[in-house]
Image (cartoon, rainbow, N blue to C red):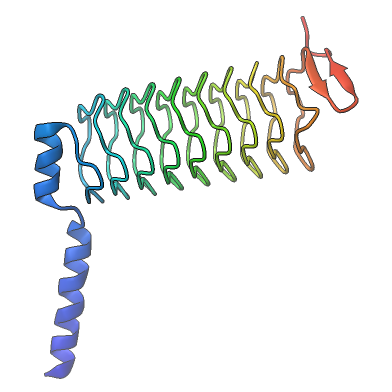
Length: 225
């Protein structure tokens, strides 16, 4: 009998964890476009209209926000670990200090977004638009940034160790004191980037476009047409 009760308890706990989010708080978000600090983990928000929503410190762990509209939303210090944000429009969103580790942001629009100090480790950002975004101090270690647009982005002191940036556009990005150790930069565009104070130990830069690119040994213009 005790054994049966034990397994029944485990089943109930597992079921409650699977549901995860608070339905009342989800309704609050839908009606007020704000739910600061709410529990929305694993919530289904596919295609949701959350333009300028207030989701400061909200828990959106493993939430599905595929193709969501989050333009100008405030997600400061929000938890988005393993969240699905594929093709979401997040232009101008505030994600400073947010946890986006292992999140899927492929093809997302993050132009002009504030991701300062955010945790994007092991995140999928392939083909994402991050032009002009603030990524200063962000952790992008082991992130997939293949074909991503990072033109003019602020990557000062960003951690990009072992990140994949194959074919990424980094033209004009600010990368002072960034760590690109072990990063894969094959075919990336590094035109107009100052890498003189950037760690490139073990980085693969084969085929990268270097035009007015500043390296520790001086300017490299080999890729200029």
